[in-house]
Length: 312
Image (cartoon, rainbow, N blue to C red; front, side):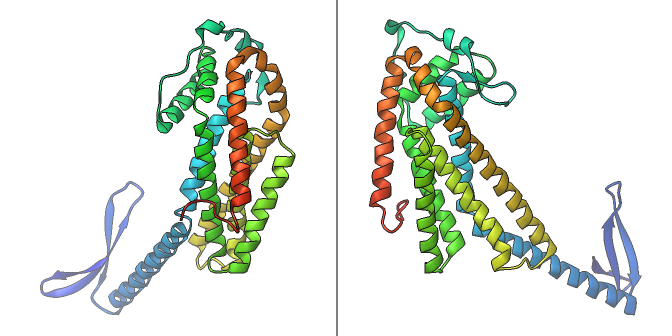
């Protein structure tokens, strides 16, 4: 869409794309119709630039919190699957988790054969867990023994994700409250109460604390998405559509987190008792590691006043 020179005269052309993908030009001449078309196209261009700026601002608001929440959800889901597989459960085509006698019986290892996994960094351990979970869910039962040993030898995986969860919570509180000190304090206490409520109703293990952090993080994300329009209405239809997609995404994540916590509350007490005879020393090592982690988490919650979730 521009003015083009033909024989020392300016003529206005409007470019458009036909269904086949080819570009065509519409001729408006050089008179009043050309000036009117140029003004209309200029207004349309400015409106599109303003909508892009608005969408960029919407994305910028959650640019810190979104990646942290995504990382927390993905890795906690992987560790949840690893924990349930190690406890003797399995699922078919992402269906409900069920007790698997084949998974337990095919992984009975003699005490002399149990060895510690090789030394790994935190990143390597998390990557290895993802690989083993994919193998186990595809039916390769031999991967379950290594999953058990890996979780026993690297309890710091849970601790690191707990730190990621704390930073995600703080990021969402900053996004929601902004400079409103009263709202910030209300959210801080609400998050603390929600964590305590969920921990009372759940088993005291590291994976449960991690899934609770996931539920709290998705609750904050959903709270932000629901309150966004109430505080500041969408300036355009495109922004309203973007906010609706964010709300739907936050709702799906929150439901997924609640479902994961419900699965743990239903299966983990049984898994802890039934799998102890199968895993042997590995389960005891994991249990002690989990108890230390839970103590550290509780101590961190008691010491954080008013709300120091992650280093500034």
